[in-house]
View 1 (cartoon, helix red, strand yellow):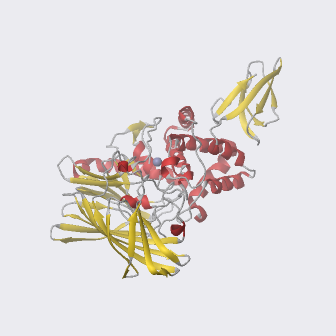
View 2: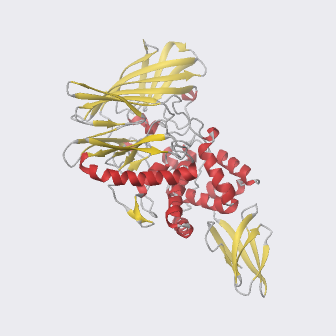
Length: 529
Ligand SMILES: [Zn+2]
Protein backbone atom coordinates (compact mmCIF):
# COMPACT_ATOMS: atom_id res chain seq x y z
CA UNK A 1 0.00 0.00 0.00
CA UNK A 2 1.05 3.62 -0.27
CA UNK A 3 0.08 6.55 -0.55
CA UNK A 4 0.00 9.33 -2.64
CA UNK A 5 1.80 12.38 -3.44
CA UNK A 6 5.22 12.35 -4.87
CA UNK A 7 6.90 13.50 -1.75
CA UNK A 8 4.54 13.14 1.16
CA UNK A 9 4.42 9.84 2.92
CA UNK A 10 1.52 9.10 5.12
CA UNK A 11 1.89 6.18 7.40
CA UNK A 12 0.16 5.04 10.46
CA UNK A 13 0.69 1.95 12.49
CA UNK A 14 -1.89 -0.69 12.08
CA UNK A 15 -4.24 -1.10 14.97
CA UNK A 16 -7.56 -2.40 13.78
CA UNK A 17 -10.49 -1.21 15.74
CA UNK A 18 -8.71 -1.13 19.02
CA UNK A 19 -8.06 -4.87 18.70
CA UNK A 20 -4.38 -4.22 18.16
CA UNK A 21 -4.21 -6.92 15.53
CA UNK A 22 -0.91 -7.46 13.80
CA UNK A 23 0.14 -9.83 11.08
CA UNK A 24 3.19 -12.07 11.00
CA UNK A 25 6.00 -11.84 13.54
CA UNK A 26 7.19 -14.96 15.28
CA UNK A 27 5.59 -17.99 13.68
CA UNK A 28 3.70 -20.19 16.13
CA UNK A 29 5.35 -23.69 16.23
CA UNK A 30 1.98 -25.39 15.63
CA UNK A 31 1.48 -23.22 12.54
CA UNK A 32 5.05 -23.80 11.36
CA UNK A 33 4.00 -27.45 11.06
CA UNK A 34 1.12 -26.49 8.72
CA UNK A 35 1.59 -25.85 5.00
CA UNK A 36 -1.50 -24.14 3.62
CA UNK A 37 -2.43 -25.50 0.20
CA UNK A 38 -5.78 -23.89 -0.55
CA UNK A 39 -8.52 -21.72 0.98
CA UNK A 40 -12.20 -21.72 0.09
CA UNK A 41 -14.12 -18.84 1.66
CA UNK A 42 -17.92 -19.15 1.50
CA UNK A 43 -19.83 -16.21 2.97
CA UNK A 44 -23.14 -14.44 2.82
CA UNK A 45 -22.60 -10.72 3.23
CA UNK A 46 -25.58 -8.79 4.53
CA UNK A 47 -25.27 -5.01 4.39
CA UNK A 48 -28.59 -4.61 6.24
CA UNK A 49 -27.06 -5.71 9.53
CA UNK A 50 -23.39 -5.46 8.52
CA UNK A 51 -22.78 -9.14 9.09
CA UNK A 52 -21.08 -12.08 7.44
CA UNK A 53 -21.99 -15.72 7.82
CA UNK A 54 -20.65 -18.94 6.32
CA UNK A 55 -17.58 -21.12 6.47
CA UNK A 56 -14.05 -21.61 5.19
CA UNK A 57 -12.49 -24.82 4.06
CA UNK A 58 -8.72 -25.03 4.24
CA UNK A 59 -6.59 -27.72 2.66
CA UNK A 60 -3.31 -28.03 4.47
CA UNK A 61 -0.47 -30.48 4.97
CA UNK A 62 0.90 -31.28 8.41
CA UNK A 63 4.59 -31.94 8.22
CA UNK A 64 4.57 -34.01 11.43
CA UNK A 65 1.72 -35.49 13.49
CA UNK A 66 0.20 -32.71 15.61
CA UNK A 67 -1.67 -32.37 18.90
CA UNK A 68 -3.46 -29.36 17.52
CA UNK A 69 -4.12 -27.27 14.45
CA UNK A 70 -4.07 -23.52 14.97
CA UNK A 71 -5.83 -20.85 12.93
CA UNK A 72 -5.99 -17.10 13.37
CA UNK A 73 -9.40 -15.44 13.62
CA UNK A 74 -10.45 -12.25 15.37
CA UNK A 75 -12.49 -12.72 18.56
CA UNK A 76 -15.08 -10.34 17.13
CA UNK A 77 -16.44 -13.24 15.05
CA UNK A 78 -18.06 -16.36 16.47
CA UNK A 79 -16.94 -19.86 15.54
CA UNK A 80 -19.86 -22.28 15.39
CA UNK A 81 -18.47 -25.65 14.42
CA UNK A 82 -15.25 -27.18 13.13
CA UNK A 83 -14.67 -30.36 11.15
CA UNK A 84 -11.33 -31.92 10.27
CA UNK A 85 -11.69 -34.34 7.37
CA UNK A 86 -15.48 -34.23 7.86
CA UNK A 87 -15.24 -35.19 11.53
CA UNK A 88 -16.43 -32.64 14.06
CA UNK A 89 -13.70 -31.51 16.46
CA UNK A 90 -13.33 -29.67 19.73
CA UNK A 91 -11.89 -26.18 19.65
CA UNK A 92 -11.07 -23.16 21.74
CA UNK A 93 -11.25 -19.63 20.37
CA UNK A 94 -9.16 -17.22 22.40
CA UNK A 95 -6.60 -14.46 21.82
CA UNK A 96 -7.72 -14.19 18.17
CA UNK A 97 -6.70 -17.82 17.63
CA UNK A 98 -8.61 -21.05 17.12
CA UNK A 99 -7.02 -24.11 18.72
CA UNK A 100 -8.42 -27.32 17.25
CA UNK A 101 -7.73 -30.52 19.14
CA UNK A 102 -8.57 -34.17 18.75
CA UNK A 103 -8.62 -37.24 21.02
CA UNK A 104 -5.80 -38.77 18.96
CA UNK A 105 -3.10 -36.58 17.35
CA UNK A 106 -3.75 -35.39 13.81
CA UNK A 107 -1.71 -37.48 11.39
CA UNK A 108 1.00 -36.02 9.21
CA UNK A 109 -0.15 -35.25 5.68
CA UNK A 110 -3.25 -33.75 4.10
CA UNK A 111 -6.05 -32.33 6.22
CA UNK A 112 -9.25 -30.57 5.26
CA UNK A 113 -10.42 -28.15 7.93
CA UNK A 114 -13.89 -26.66 7.70
CA UNK A 115 -14.77 -23.84 10.08
CA UNK A 116 -18.31 -22.46 10.28
CA UNK A 117 -18.44 -18.96 11.70
CA UNK A 118 -20.07 -15.58 11.42
CA UNK A 119 -20.85 -12.28 13.06
CA UNK A 120 -20.18 -8.60 12.59
CA UNK A 121 -16.64 -8.03 11.41
CA UNK A 122 -14.76 -5.05 12.81
CA UNK A 123 -15.24 -1.79 10.98
CA UNK A 124 -12.16 -0.07 9.59
CA UNK A 125 -11.20 3.02 11.56
CA UNK A 126 -9.01 4.48 8.88
CA UNK A 127 -8.72 2.17 5.90
CA UNK A 128 -6.37 1.11 4.45
CA UNK A 129 -4.11 1.84 7.43
CA UNK A 130 -6.36 0.87 10.30
CA UNK A 131 -8.38 -1.69 8.50
CA UNK A 132 -11.43 -3.88 8.51
CA UNK A 133 -14.79 -3.68 6.76
CA UNK A 134 -16.27 -0.53 5.31
CA UNK A 135 -20.03 -0.52 4.90
CA UNK A 136 -20.38 2.60 2.79
CA UNK A 137 -22.90 3.81 0.25
CA UNK A 138 -22.27 5.26 -3.19
CA UNK A 139 -23.79 8.63 -4.15
CA UNK A 140 -26.96 6.84 -5.28
CA UNK A 141 -27.39 5.22 -1.88
CA UNK A 142 -26.37 1.72 -2.98
CA UNK A 143 -24.29 -0.40 -0.58
CA UNK A 144 -20.56 -0.15 -1.26
CA UNK A 145 -18.60 -2.62 0.84
CA UNK A 146 -14.87 -2.91 1.07
CA UNK A 147 -12.33 -4.94 3.01
CA UNK A 148 -8.70 -4.10 3.66
CA UNK A 149 -6.38 -5.89 6.07
CA UNK A 150 -2.72 -5.66 5.14
CA UNK A 151 -1.56 -4.71 8.63
CA UNK A 152 -4.01 -6.89 10.52
CA UNK A 153 -4.15 -9.92 8.24
CA UNK A 154 -7.13 -11.74 6.77
CA UNK A 155 -7.98 -13.06 10.24
CA UNK A 156 -10.15 -9.96 10.55
CA UNK A 157 -12.72 -11.87 8.53
CA UNK A 158 -11.76 -15.48 7.85
CA UNK A 159 -9.83 -18.20 9.71
CA UNK A 160 -6.36 -18.47 8.22
CA UNK A 161 -2.70 -18.93 8.96
CA UNK A 162 -1.85 -15.28 9.17
CA UNK A 163 1.81 -15.21 8.25
CA UNK A 164 3.46 -13.89 5.08
CA UNK A 165 5.67 -16.97 4.80
CA UNK A 166 2.81 -19.25 3.78
CA UNK A 167 0.69 -18.53 0.73
CA UNK A 168 -1.81 -21.18 -0.41
CA UNK A 169 0.11 -23.01 -3.13
CA UNK A 170 -3.03 -23.91 -5.05
CA UNK A 171 -4.77 -20.56 -4.67
CA UNK A 172 -8.16 -19.68 -3.29
CA UNK A 173 -11.87 -19.84 -4.08
CA UNK A 174 -14.27 -17.17 -2.88
CA UNK A 175 -17.98 -17.89 -3.02
CA UNK A 176 -19.69 -14.73 -1.87
CA UNK A 177 -23.42 -14.09 -1.67
CA UNK A 178 -24.81 -10.55 -1.66
CA UNK A 179 -28.23 -8.92 -2.18
CA UNK A 180 -29.28 -9.12 -5.83
CA UNK A 181 -28.29 -6.06 -7.87
CA UNK A 182 -24.88 -5.79 -6.23
CA UNK A 183 -21.70 -7.18 -7.75
CA UNK A 184 -18.80 -8.89 -5.99
CA UNK A 185 -15.32 -8.11 -7.35
CA UNK A 186 -12.71 -10.66 -6.32
CA UNK A 187 -9.36 -12.23 -7.18
CA UNK A 188 -8.71 -14.45 -10.18
CA UNK A 189 -11.46 -15.48 -12.56
CA UNK A 190 -15.22 -15.18 -12.17
CA UNK A 191 -16.37 -18.79 -12.61
CA UNK A 192 -20.07 -18.43 -11.99
CA UNK A 193 -22.85 -16.10 -10.90
CA UNK A 194 -26.12 -17.59 -9.66
CA UNK A 195 -29.28 -15.99 -8.28
CA UNK A 196 -31.62 -17.27 -5.59
CA UNK A 197 -34.50 -15.46 -3.89
CA UNK A 198 -33.16 -11.92 -3.97
CA UNK A 199 -29.53 -12.92 -3.49
CA UNK A 200 -26.67 -13.39 -5.97
CA UNK A 201 -23.68 -15.65 -5.47
CA UNK A 202 -20.34 -14.88 -7.14
CA UNK A 203 -17.69 -17.56 -7.40
CA UNK A 204 -14.19 -16.14 -7.87
CA UNK A 205 -11.24 -18.48 -8.22
CA UNK A 206 -7.51 -17.92 -8.42
CA UNK A 207 -5.09 -20.74 -9.12
CA UNK A 208 -2.09 -18.63 -8.20
CA UNK A 209 -0.40 -18.29 -4.83
CA UNK A 210 -1.77 -15.26 -3.04
CA UNK A 211 -1.01 -13.35 0.17
CA UNK A 212 -3.75 -13.74 2.73
CA UNK A 213 -4.43 -9.97 2.88
CA UNK A 214 -5.27 -10.15 -0.85
CA UNK A 215 -7.86 -12.91 -0.43
CA UNK A 216 -10.83 -10.63 -0.21
CA UNK A 217 -13.58 -8.95 -2.18
CA UNK A 218 -15.36 -5.65 -2.70
CA UNK A 219 -19.06 -5.23 -3.27
CA UNK A 220 -20.87 -2.42 -5.03
CA UNK A 221 -23.30 -1.41 -7.73
CA UNK A 222 -20.46 -1.86 -10.16
CA UNK A 223 -20.30 -1.60 -13.91
CA UNK A 224 -17.70 -3.74 -15.60
CA UNK A 225 -15.57 -1.94 -18.18
CA UNK A 226 -13.01 -4.16 -19.86
CA UNK A 227 -10.63 -4.54 -22.73
CA UNK A 228 -7.89 -6.95 -23.75
CA UNK A 229 -4.25 -6.29 -22.98
CA UNK A 230 -1.39 -8.03 -24.77
CA UNK A 231 1.56 -8.58 -22.46
CA UNK A 232 5.21 -8.02 -23.30
CA UNK A 233 5.44 -11.78 -23.91
CA UNK A 234 2.46 -11.71 -26.26
CA UNK A 235 -0.20 -13.18 -23.97
CA UNK A 236 -3.69 -11.74 -24.12
CA UNK A 237 -5.12 -10.81 -20.69
CA UNK A 238 -8.49 -9.27 -19.88
CA UNK A 239 -8.14 -5.86 -18.23
CA UNK A 240 -11.21 -5.24 -16.09
CA UNK A 241 -12.40 -2.27 -14.10
CA UNK A 242 -15.23 -2.74 -11.60
CA UNK A 243 -16.25 0.91 -11.46
CA UNK A 244 -19.21 2.45 -9.66
CA UNK A 245 -21.98 3.11 -12.14
CA UNK A 246 -21.74 6.83 -11.44
CA UNK A 247 -18.11 6.86 -12.66
CA UNK A 248 -18.52 4.60 -15.66
CA UNK A 249 -17.78 7.40 -18.14
CA UNK A 250 -14.32 7.85 -16.61
CA UNK A 251 -13.36 4.19 -16.91
CA UNK A 252 -12.01 4.07 -20.47
CA UNK A 253 -9.50 6.86 -19.91
CA UNK A 254 -8.55 5.33 -16.58
CA UNK A 255 -7.78 2.02 -18.28
CA UNK A 256 -5.59 3.92 -20.76
CA UNK A 257 -3.49 5.05 -17.79
CA UNK A 258 -3.41 1.54 -16.34
CA UNK A 259 -2.32 0.15 -19.69
CA UNK A 260 0.54 2.65 -19.89
CA UNK A 261 1.65 1.83 -16.33
CA UNK A 262 1.60 -1.86 -17.22
CA UNK A 263 3.78 -1.31 -20.29
CA UNK A 264 6.39 0.60 -18.29
CA UNK A 265 6.41 -1.89 -15.41
CA UNK A 266 6.66 -4.87 -17.77
CA UNK A 267 9.65 -3.24 -19.42
CA UNK A 268 11.57 -3.13 -16.14
CA UNK A 269 10.14 -6.07 -14.21
CA UNK A 270 9.02 -8.57 -16.85
CA UNK A 271 5.63 -9.83 -17.94
CA UNK A 272 2.52 -8.99 -15.89
CA UNK A 273 2.58 -11.75 -13.25
CA UNK A 274 -1.01 -13.04 -13.45
CA UNK A 275 -1.37 -13.34 -17.21
CA UNK A 276 -3.52 -16.51 -17.01
CA UNK A 277 -6.18 -14.68 -15.04
CA UNK A 278 -6.71 -10.94 -15.34
CA UNK A 279 -5.58 -7.40 -14.74
CA UNK A 280 -8.25 -5.99 -12.44
CA UNK A 281 -9.13 -2.93 -10.43
CA UNK A 282 -12.16 -2.22 -8.28
CA UNK A 283 -13.30 1.18 -7.07
CA UNK A 284 -13.16 1.32 -3.27
CA UNK A 285 -14.11 3.82 -0.58
CA UNK A 286 -10.52 3.67 0.80
CA UNK A 287 -7.47 4.97 -1.00
CA UNK A 288 -5.99 1.76 -2.32
CA UNK A 289 -4.31 -1.58 -1.78
CA UNK A 290 -2.48 -4.11 -3.89
CA UNK A 291 -5.18 -6.78 -3.96
CA UNK A 292 -3.86 -9.30 -6.43
CA UNK A 293 -5.61 -9.20 -9.83
CA UNK A 294 -8.19 -6.80 -8.32
CA UNK A 295 -6.31 -3.76 -7.06
CA UNK A 296 -8.30 -1.49 -4.81
CA UNK A 297 -8.56 1.97 -6.35
CA UNK A 298 -9.90 4.91 -4.34
CA UNK A 299 -8.01 7.96 -5.59
CA UNK A 300 -11.18 9.38 -7.12
CA UNK A 301 -9.68 9.90 -10.59
CA UNK A 302 -7.41 12.68 -9.34
CA UNK A 303 -4.71 12.98 -11.95
CA UNK A 304 -1.51 14.96 -12.10
CA UNK A 305 0.53 15.63 -15.23
CA UNK A 306 3.51 13.47 -16.05
CA UNK A 307 5.24 14.10 -19.36
CA UNK A 308 2.26 16.32 -20.24
CA UNK A 309 -0.21 13.46 -19.79
CA UNK A 310 -2.67 12.47 -17.09
CA UNK A 311 -1.13 10.26 -14.45
CA UNK A 312 -2.53 8.62 -11.30
CA UNK A 313 0.13 7.96 -8.66
CA UNK A 314 -2.08 5.72 -6.62
CA UNK A 315 -3.13 3.58 -9.54
CA UNK A 316 0.46 3.18 -10.69
CA UNK A 317 1.87 2.43 -7.24
CA UNK A 318 -0.71 -0.19 -6.31
CA UNK A 319 -0.34 -1.80 -9.70
CA UNK A 320 3.44 -1.97 -9.22
CA UNK A 321 2.69 -4.22 -6.26
CA UNK A 322 1.50 -6.92 -8.65
CA UNK A 323 5.25 -7.52 -9.06
CA UNK A 324 6.55 -6.27 -5.67
CA UNK A 325 4.43 -7.81 -2.90
CA UNK A 326 2.18 -10.12 -4.86
CA UNK A 327 4.71 -11.89 -7.10
CA UNK A 328 7.85 -11.16 -5.06
CA UNK A 329 6.68 -11.51 -1.46
CA UNK A 330 8.53 -10.91 1.80
CA UNK A 331 8.69 -14.09 3.86
CA UNK A 332 8.77 -12.03 7.06
CA UNK A 333 7.33 -8.51 7.42
CA UNK A 334 10.80 -7.49 8.67
CA UNK A 335 11.75 -7.34 4.99
CA UNK A 336 8.73 -5.37 3.83
CA UNK A 337 11.00 -2.82 2.12
CA UNK A 338 11.38 -5.37 -0.70
CA UNK A 339 7.67 -4.91 -1.38
CA UNK A 340 7.28 -1.20 -0.65
CA UNK A 341 10.73 0.17 -1.46
CA UNK A 342 11.14 -1.52 -4.83
CA UNK A 343 7.52 -0.78 -5.72
CA UNK A 344 8.18 2.88 -4.89
CA UNK A 345 11.26 2.71 -7.09
CA UNK A 346 8.86 1.66 -9.87
CA UNK A 347 7.05 4.96 -9.24
CA UNK A 348 10.31 6.75 -10.09
CA UNK A 349 10.97 4.59 -13.15
CA UNK A 350 7.80 5.78 -14.85
CA UNK A 351 9.04 9.34 -14.31
CA UNK A 352 12.22 8.31 -16.10
CA UNK A 353 10.22 6.90 -18.98
CA UNK A 354 7.81 9.79 -19.34
CA UNK A 355 9.97 12.77 -18.45
CA UNK A 356 13.53 11.57 -18.88
CA UNK A 357 16.61 10.82 -16.81
CA UNK A 358 16.96 14.33 -15.32
CA UNK A 359 13.41 14.30 -13.99
CA UNK A 360 14.04 10.86 -12.48
CA UNK A 361 17.26 12.09 -10.81
CA UNK A 362 15.40 15.09 -9.40
CA UNK A 363 12.72 12.88 -8.02
CA UNK A 364 15.30 10.70 -6.28
CA UNK A 365 16.95 13.83 -4.83
CA UNK A 366 13.60 14.77 -3.33
CA UNK A 367 13.21 11.20 -2.04
CA UNK A 368 16.63 11.51 -0.34
CA UNK A 369 15.54 14.72 1.41
CA UNK A 370 12.49 12.93 2.79
CA UNK A 371 14.42 10.05 4.39
CA UNK A 372 13.85 10.08 8.15
CA UNK A 373 16.64 7.75 9.28
CA UNK A 374 14.99 7.27 12.64
CA UNK A 375 14.53 3.51 12.45
CA UNK A 376 16.43 0.97 10.40
CA UNK A 377 14.54 -0.37 7.40
CA UNK A 378 15.16 -3.93 8.61
CA UNK A 379 14.80 -4.03 12.40
CA UNK A 380 15.63 -7.70 12.93
CA UNK A 381 13.93 -10.97 12.09
CA UNK A 382 10.39 -12.21 12.75
CA UNK A 383 9.06 -8.69 13.03
CA UNK A 384 5.31 -8.12 12.79
CA UNK A 385 3.58 -5.83 10.31
CA UNK A 386 3.02 -3.11 12.91
CA UNK A 387 6.60 -2.75 14.08
CA UNK A 388 8.12 -2.95 10.62
CA UNK A 389 5.91 -0.29 9.07
CA UNK A 390 7.40 3.20 8.78
CA UNK A 391 7.98 5.76 6.05
CA UNK A 392 11.56 4.85 5.21
CA UNK A 393 10.63 1.39 3.94
CA UNK A 394 9.10 3.31 1.00
CA UNK A 395 11.32 6.24 0.11
CA UNK A 396 14.63 5.18 1.56
CA UNK A 397 14.03 1.67 0.21
CA UNK A 398 13.48 3.16 -3.24
CA UNK A 399 16.52 5.39 -2.87
CA UNK A 400 18.59 2.34 -2.04
CA UNK A 401 17.69 0.95 -5.47
CA UNK A 402 18.82 4.26 -6.98
CA UNK A 403 22.16 3.93 -5.17
CA UNK A 404 22.54 0.32 -6.31
CA UNK A 405 21.87 1.38 -9.88
CA UNK A 406 24.66 3.95 -9.69
CA UNK A 407 27.11 1.56 -8.03
CA UNK A 408 26.45 -1.36 -10.38
CA UNK A 409 25.78 0.53 -13.60
CA UNK A 410 22.71 0.11 -15.79
CA UNK A 411 24.06 -2.94 -17.69
CA UNK A 412 24.17 -4.95 -14.46
CA UNK A 413 21.51 -3.29 -12.35
CA UNK A 414 18.44 -3.40 -14.59
CA UNK A 415 18.77 -7.05 -15.69
CA UNK A 416 19.32 -8.04 -12.04
CA UNK A 417 16.24 -6.15 -10.89
CA UNK A 418 14.24 -7.90 -13.61
CA UNK A 419 15.71 -11.23 -12.59
CA UNK A 420 14.52 -10.70 -9.02
CA UNK A 421 11.00 -10.25 -10.40
CA UNK A 422 11.11 -13.16 -12.85
CA UNK A 423 13.37 -15.96 -11.57
CA UNK A 424 11.24 -18.76 -10.03
CA UNK A 425 13.49 -18.94 -6.98
CA UNK A 426 12.35 -15.45 -5.91
CA UNK A 427 8.76 -15.42 -7.09
CA UNK A 428 5.27 -16.82 -6.43
CA UNK A 429 5.44 -19.39 -3.60
CA UNK A 430 9.18 -18.79 -3.15
CA UNK A 431 9.17 -15.84 -0.76
CA UNK A 432 12.24 -13.69 -0.11
CA UNK A 433 14.21 -11.88 2.57
CA UNK A 434 16.87 -9.16 2.27
CA UNK A 435 19.73 -11.68 2.18
CA UNK A 436 18.30 -13.23 -1.00
CA UNK A 437 18.25 -9.81 -2.66
CA UNK A 438 21.77 -9.00 -1.50
CA UNK A 439 23.17 -12.31 -2.76
CA UNK A 440 21.54 -11.89 -6.16
CA UNK A 441 22.81 -8.34 -6.65
CA UNK A 442 26.30 -9.15 -5.30
CA UNK A 443 26.58 -12.09 -7.65
CA UNK A 444 25.60 -9.94 -10.62
CA UNK A 445 27.97 -7.17 -9.54
CA UNK A 446 30.86 -9.61 -9.13
CA UNK A 447 31.77 -8.24 -5.68
CA UNK A 448 30.00 -8.26 -2.35
CA UNK A 449 27.50 -5.47 -1.89
CA UNK A 450 26.82 -6.63 1.65
CA UNK A 451 28.44 -3.57 3.34
CA UNK A 452 26.15 -1.26 1.36
CA UNK A 453 23.06 -3.36 2.15
CA UNK A 454 24.01 -3.32 5.85
CA UNK A 455 24.58 0.45 5.94
CA UNK A 456 21.35 1.40 4.17
CA UNK A 457 19.00 -1.24 5.45
CA UNK A 458 20.18 -2.33 8.89
CA UNK A 459 21.37 1.03 10.30
CA UNK A 460 20.12 4.61 10.32
CA UNK A 461 23.60 5.88 9.43
CA UNK A 462 24.33 7.82 6.30
CA UNK A 463 27.41 7.19 4.24
CA UNK A 464 30.11 9.35 5.85
CA UNK A 465 32.69 10.93 3.59
CA UNK A 466 35.60 13.06 4.70
CA UNK A 467 37.20 15.71 2.45
CA UNK A 468 40.51 17.03 3.74
CA UNK A 469 42.63 19.67 2.00
CA UNK A 470 46.16 18.27 1.94
CA UNK A 471 47.82 20.85 -0.31
CA UNK A 472 47.05 24.07 -2.13
CA UNK A 473 45.08 22.20 -4.79
CA UNK A 474 44.90 18.72 -3.27
CA UNK A 475 41.98 17.10 -1.50
CA UNK A 476 41.90 13.68 0.13
CA UNK A 477 38.44 12.08 -0.19
CA UNK A 478 37.84 9.15 2.18
CA UNK A 479 34.96 6.86 3.14
CA UNK A 480 34.61 6.73 6.91
CA UNK A 481 32.01 4.02 7.51
CA UNK A 482 31.87 1.77 4.47
CA UNK A 483 34.35 -1.00 3.92
CA UNK A 484 34.11 -1.43 0.17
CA UNK A 485 35.05 0.41 -2.98
CA UNK A 486 32.33 2.50 -4.55
CA UNK A 487 32.15 4.90 -7.47
CA UNK A 488 31.82 8.53 -6.36
CA UNK A 489 31.30 11.65 -8.45
CA UNK A 490 33.60 14.56 -7.57
CA UNK A 491 33.20 18.01 -9.06
CA UNK A 492 36.41 20.04 -9.22
CA UNK A 493 37.29 23.29 -10.99
CA UNK A 494 37.74 21.31 -14.20
CA UNK A 495 34.46 19.39 -14.16
CA UNK A 496 32.97 16.22 -12.73
CA UNK A 497 34.85 12.91 -12.64
CA UNK A 498 33.99 9.55 -11.11
CA UNK A 499 36.58 8.20 -8.69
CA UNK A 500 36.72 4.83 -6.96
CA UNK A 501 36.33 5.86 -3.35
CA UNK A 502 37.80 3.77 -0.51
CA UNK A 503 38.36 4.03 3.20
CA UNK A 504 42.06 4.68 2.51
CA UNK A 505 41.20 7.74 0.47
CA UNK A 506 41.81 9.13 -2.99
CA UNK A 507 43.57 12.45 -3.67
CA UNK A 508 41.81 14.77 -6.11
CA UNK A 509 43.37 17.85 -7.67
CA UNK A 510 41.27 21.00 -7.83
CA UNK A 511 41.83 24.74 -7.67
CA UNK A 512 38.49 25.09 -5.90
CA UNK A 513 36.87 23.13 -3.09
CA UNK A 514 35.57 19.82 -4.43
CA UNK A 515 31.90 18.89 -4.33
CA UNK A 516 31.14 15.25 -3.52
CA UNK A 517 28.28 13.35 -5.19
CA UNK A 518 26.62 16.44 -6.67
CA UNK A 519 23.72 14.52 -8.20
CA UNK A 520 22.94 12.71 -4.92
CA UNK A 521 23.38 9.04 -5.67
CA UNK A 522 24.06 8.40 -1.97
CA UNK A 523 22.42 9.28 1.31
CA UNK A 524 25.49 10.84 2.85
CA UNK A 525 27.12 13.15 5.33
CA UNK A 526 30.20 14.95 4.04
CA UNK A 527 32.69 16.39 6.52
CA UNK A 528 35.10 19.03 5.27
CA UNK A 529 38.24 19.06 7.40
ZN1 LIG B 1 2.73 0.31 -1.46
